[in-house]
Length: 529
Image 1 (cartoon, rainbow, N blue to C red):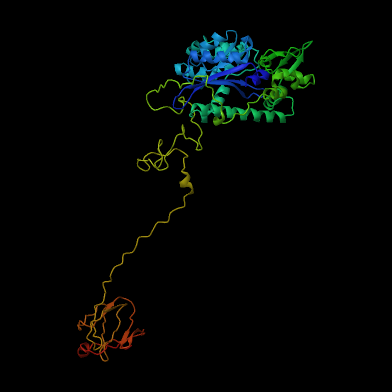
Image 2: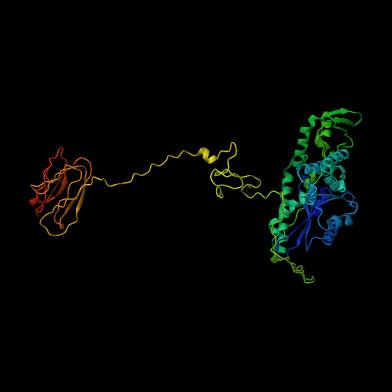
């Protein structure tokens, strides 16, 4: 890894630490560089007991030895203002440039209570992105107009640590964030809760695969510049058409980009008064407009640290594979390495980092509704839904224009008709018991419901005639009985003999009075039409 860094990486190093989640806890310290395609290039890492000044000094001393840094004047270090780093870097690299992550700077300002609201945040970033001094001063004056308290908190901070207008020009990078180290921490996230040997082997394996993959990608590139750098140059070229270059003699040009925006460009020295070309090594829009006016290619004016050949040289140094743990050679002359002192803090160990109050939660499959005002479809109130609604329906008026999606698509309901109760008619006929055959065995009564004022004849000579809907019951023997019910509908005669019973309909039956002699007869009744 160190050989690849010295082969072609830019002299800017990000330093960061993260806590481990294993049984013995501890911290991982890492140093991360940048390759020719603006991607991360891990340099070294180490596991320590805690993150403090002594641990960082020990780690940086080994880093100086491995990278053979004799003069730190050309190096730049990017940190997160962590414990010990603010003192360890100036102590070991007194002549190097030191940058601070602007996101952590804003987080500290917000914690102090002086930076509240998006307007102050935008002003801070405007001052950080300013590339020349007058632009930086103008942004600070605007910040003072917004909030004098915020200006008083930020103005004592050295702008060489957090603003592009005061950055050194040796590292060819205008980074304001320490995202390279954050990405490396995410890369090893799965291994941070494993035992120490498994943890180190997992990181080594990931880095071995990454170097081999990036080497294969670089071998397939055929352009002069790396893909990310070529994309940045193309975007700047598309914006350069809005600039108007004017020749000023020699290799000097004056470029206008609208009112109160005018810069001077020197093609021979590769400089521009906006300082973007010097900061990054990639021509700015003012320089590209001049290059196009002289009918030349902008790729020729890009620094060699972005060439594909540089990328191939960086990844020509790979990590060799290692045999399994069972094949490792033992060293009897070396004392065994003891585990660190077990220091377990009180309470349940934390597995997740603490997020800030305004930080968005991670996306986990389902989109969060945090910050969205909810309205109930039942009562129209806010702050709850239809499941948790406890108010009266219609108690809170709905908002103007609010229409429930389910109510808009719901089909109208047809009201159910009330069920008609089944009642026994008042004109229910009386029952008539008629003896059956001569058999003395008790039989179950046959119940027949009849419709209005029929004529029923029993036995051979007798019949029952009723002119009203309520006939008088006729006494019979209890052993054999036929029960007849009367209801107000057309008459239906009934006949029964020894072989069975059948129904027949007569158009106009003639009623006859019943015979008392035949009513008590034991013979089988017969009903004639």
